[in-house]
Amino acid sequence: METAIIIGRCSTTEKKQDVQRQVQELQEKYDNQFKIVEVKAYYMSGTKNQKINDDILKLVKELNIQNVIVSEVSRVSRKVVDFLQFVEITNDLGVNIIIDNHGLSTLNQDKTVNIMTQTMLTIGASFASMELKQTMQRMNSGRKKYIKDGGKLGRNIGTTETPQQFINKHKDVVRHLKSGQSIRNTMVLTSKSSGTVQKIKKLLI
Image (cartoon, helix red, strand yellow):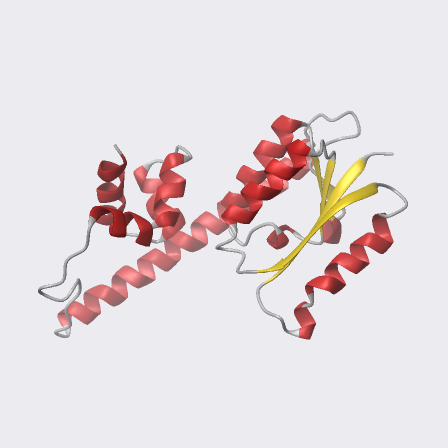
């Protein structure tokens, strides 16, 4: 019997998002199909849980886990791009991800990549990218109107910020640049300005 880890995540402790309910339903459904060797259940925003996902991947390697079971894509990450990176790593490890609500598996039974699932996830990433671009356009439009009406942007005069403080404030930019994303793609993925992304890139050199 193949081994598996169940991941349950919620952003709040509201009953309608009860993380234990997620885990229990998955255990009841898959307990006869896999040997559940680990359960990771936690409360955190799906846009800020990259560190936990990194820890889960380390655990998967250490315990030689063959399957990762989640109720839906967003339980791993709310950012589709981050989820795709998670999938890419598990593909390389020969680890299958089961996405319960859509009945999808990232690998076939022979451990080859499931092209249909990969295509669906890639299309989802494209739509997410388009949505972020539209959000950036609306934000830029709002900034221009704010400035036109007399508003001012930027730090207050007299305030200082060290390079490390600046990097710490934009960890999402750092992560995407280190993963190999271009400046333009990083701008889209983080909704940060060109100046911010370029400054971070220079600081990382």
